[in-house]
Length: 108
Image (cartoon, rainbow, N blue to C red; front, side, top):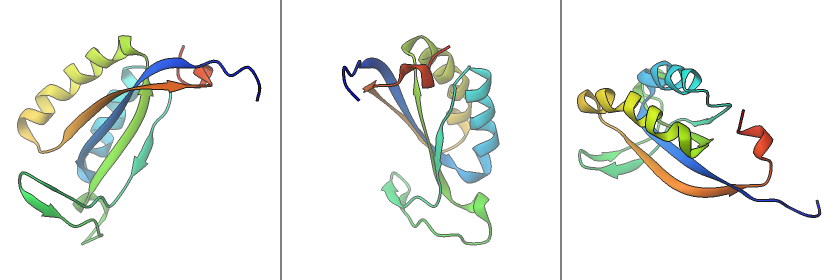
């Protein structure tokens, strides 16, 4: 690949309980997000202590992370959609600036 062109986007890392995956992916789909990656069985430590990432009874009983690269213009709508959810449930959304080389994969 020669003449790489870099385009700025925002990376969203959405962490929530696996039982809420359909809610999160539906929200992203309705916001026009072109794609995302889902990581299952997360481990980590937060305000409620350590969470071990292994299947207990089913895939709903684990933490997941959904990673999406989105244009900045979509971020506010996505965060507005998650705000009521995070008032009632645990989890977090991390937002960072990134650059991608194939913008066509992420934009309209």
